[in-house]
Structures are given as structure tokens and as C-alpha cells.
Length: 118
Image (cartoon, rainbow, N blue to C red):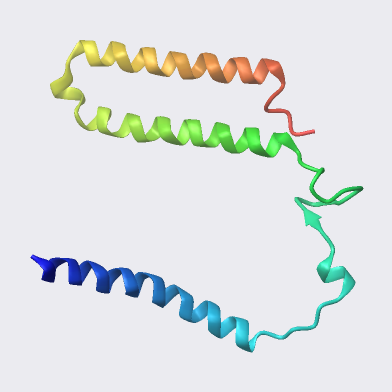
């Protein structure tokens, strides 16, 4: 029984070691010539004005959140499409309800201006 856990331990050590080796090698051999321009803060195409931690555009977060929501929608649609023939008319109604709720959310976000870039 313990031999099974030994394999898990070996895989865990390998999973930690193999990614660390290239990181350590690159830390040793990379050129180290810091300048003021290289050390300055650069965030999403905008130069930082004022405090570094203050500047944050919420639009980037909203776009990422909308992407995640519709990406998860796709994850839910795929198994439904595979199982569609055996599921019947009720599953079709449920999927249209699901898509209607997501569409209402998208229209709401669009009208509130959450998807405006500038």
C-alpha cells in the first residue's frame, strides 16, 4: 500500500523539480543590467501616473470576467450537445432558458456600458 504513495511522492518531486530547473538556469545566466527605464512601471499600454498601485482600469477586469462567463457557457453547451438526442424536449427548453439568462446578462452589461473600452 505504501508503494503506491511512493509513486505519488516521486511524481510530486518531479513536478516541482522539472519546472524549477529552467527557472534557476535562466536566473543564473541572464544578463543583469537594470536601468531606470527597465525598472519603471508599465501597465497595459499606459504610463503610470502617481502612485503605482492606484492605477487600475476596471474595464480589463470586466472583459476578463465576461470572457470567463461565456467560456464556461461553452463548457456547459458541449456535453448537452453530445447528449441532445437522448435528453428530449425538456433538456432543449432548459438549454434555451440557460442561454436566455446569459443573453439577458450580456444585454444588461452592454446597456450599462461595462463593455465600452474607452
